[in-house]
Image (cartoon, rainbow, N blue to C red):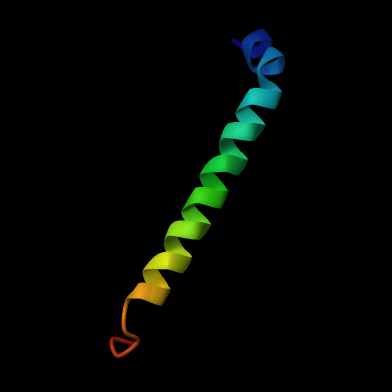
Length: 39
């Protein structure tokens, strides 16, 4: 399993950074599209 992780470390890093960017964009869109009267 460790060899697989080492061999695919670049792919895993790309996936993780992609998830982070998507999550950040979704959070930005959510906070902008909602009115700020709940906070």
